[in-house]
Amino acid sequence: MIFDRGYRWYPLIPDQIARFKLTASVPNEYIVFSAGDFVGKKKLADHSQFLWESKIPVFKLPLIIARSSFYNETVRKCGGKEIYFYSFSVDKEIKEKILSEACSTLKFYNEFIGEYHHHRLTLIETPEMEGTNIGTALLMIGTTFIDAFKQGQYENLQLSIACQWMAGGVFFEFLGKGFWFLQLSFPHYLRLMYLEKVKGKDAFIKGLNKGLDAYKEFAGTDKDVPIIDVDYLDTKEKGRVIYGKGPYVFDQVRRQIGDENWLKFIRDIYKDFKGRILTCDEFINYLSRYDRDGTCVSKLEKMLSRTGLSED
Image (cartoon, rainbow, N blue to C red; front, side, top):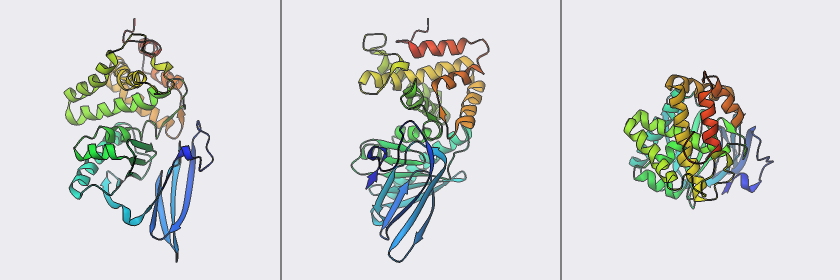
């Protein structure tokens, strides 16, 4: 049984975030999962109490209740953190490969951006789901991506873990200016940087061009839309703007200010906005600290507000 933000099972204001502590009492044969960290379980005569909490605010509070016998639990120690994987269709060998990839990805962001803000990351195979439901410290992974993981295709896993820093650690103004650019294009670019680290420059370029080529099919036409004007991802073209053009824009920013400043920029954002909401204007203002003559900020604003790829 899954409750998510759409069920309105707790007081919810969509554009706000909050810390929480959740106590759930269930019959002894059940287990409870939520966002944040698992604090402990108290087993009583006829029921058990599970306690979950987050010391930084979160943007949603999912709740999963399942029979304990439904899942197999596998745990991986990972650089002072723990990754828990709960599955029912994945054999031991594949689980170890998935956990190895998850740990490698988590370590990269931990070192590149800043220390992960929870003690554990929980991965749960979720039946009858297609995609991945990303929460803070909790990934509910549907059938489509579990099948991809079994084939050694980890793109979604890498992206979902990147979102733990940018989208589930630093939050963005819900449906505000540039929301989808920050919410999805940003972690997509971070995922490409992970590929660059582990597989080399060619893998990075191939990944960047894959999305960009799909965008170029209609770039600058009447089907195109400026990144800043994407309100909902309700058309194929809007999706390609965010998934294809968006990471390219981040790459242009990185190249304009240089790798050293890019690293400082990302780390400063995480340090100052972890557990807070970052607006697009604040993002641009932070960028100006590393842009000596304003060229990069000007270029970014043009690429966000215009269609196509030209900054002229």
